[in-house]
Amino acid sequence: MSVPQNSDHPLSPEELAEVVARDIPAGAYVNLGIGQPTLVSNYLSAEDDVTLHTENGMLGMGAEAHGDEVDPDLINAGKIPVVETEGCSYFHHADSFAMMRGGHLDCCVLGAFQVDQQGNLANWHTGKPDAIPAVGGAMDLATGAKQTFVMMTLKTKKGQSKLVKECTMPLTGVGCVSRIYTDLGVFLLEDGKVTVRETFGVGFDELAQQVDVELTPAR
Amino acid sequence: MLNIADSAAAAVELIHDGACVMIGGFGVAGQPVELIDALIEHGAKDLTVVNNNAGNGDVGLAKLIQLGRVQKIICSFPRQSDSWHFDEKYRAGEIELEVVPQGNLAERIRAAGAGIGAFFTPTGYGTSLAEGKEVRELDGKHQVLEYPIHADFSLTKAYRADKAGNLVYRKTARNFGPIMAAAATHSIVQVSDIVERGQIDPEVVVTPGIYVDTVVQINRPQQQDPREEGAA
Image (tube, rainbow over all chains, first blue to last red; front, side, top):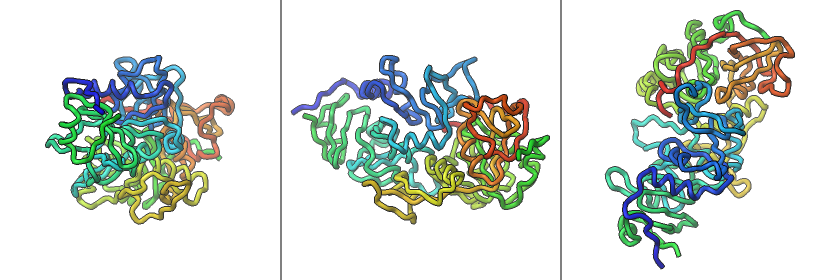
């Protein structure tokens, strides 16, 4: 029983995005959250036939628009100008979220402040008393997609693990996360059990010491 | 019957103090800038505003907030890098905030237009935004009771109207337009172009004229470059 260490260094956000992209099944409908998850689109090829959804009302979202391509009426959920792809479509906000909430999206990739071993996700609110809460589409995405993947650095800037026994920050969704992609390893969550599929830049034993959650090596 | 207003000022003249006003747009796309400017000039106060955000920069909704005309805002994402007018009013306790998950916001608006009394949804279950709300286990999932959001007026932007009030939009500028027009007692729409009946293919009409009360033609609407706007 050993977990493959698939890199001699912790992965950069770009390298991690490539790992996530490889796991997205061909033909899937996918929503990529704002921030790091957006990088995943750079590693999807035409042969993958993956259709990107953006919650402000488009399927078949293309790459970021530059120069003359910029159309103020065509932006993504991060409010970045984008281009169309062939076969794209537009719809209003309620249809867009019905697509998500109705379980039609195969997967979404979100950032996180914390994820716990039960798959609870905290990614919208620090909980600090002076913070102004802003949720956007995070709760709908976390709960509505068939699979919710998290992509994040394993640790905070202060070195604390963001994979925890129980989230202490305000929740975005309950039991919704099935997989966590981090710079140090990929974690699979099922029924409260956390399995390590692969590690990057550390071995399994060393990783297990850095996380206050019981980790199981993948068979 | 469709009212075709001569100006943005005439289009918003019925908006009264204390009204609930839905304002369309997501980022710069679909923002009815001229209608918001007209509402600012008009002077209505104590408004409840429903929008995805809480204003950006110093114009439009941000200016309406800065002027103290908004007593409550219902939105999904108030805090942005350039939402300083909202932030200031909120921290001073001068504006009430109801934060709603974006899908609940859209569905609650849709429900109002469709005459739905309330609905259950899994979104938000187990979070602070569902506190105090009724929860039922339906279809094996915990679901939260949510109520529709009705409005007295909606201000939205479409690309083209015909004289029957049928609307078409452009790209992601559609966003909240169709559902807000349906949810408001009096919907007000600015368009770049008004054409005769029959000049919009009935197969491509997005918002049928039954949902539209007032349209006004704004030939060259102001539109900020999305690259200059604050993130998220």
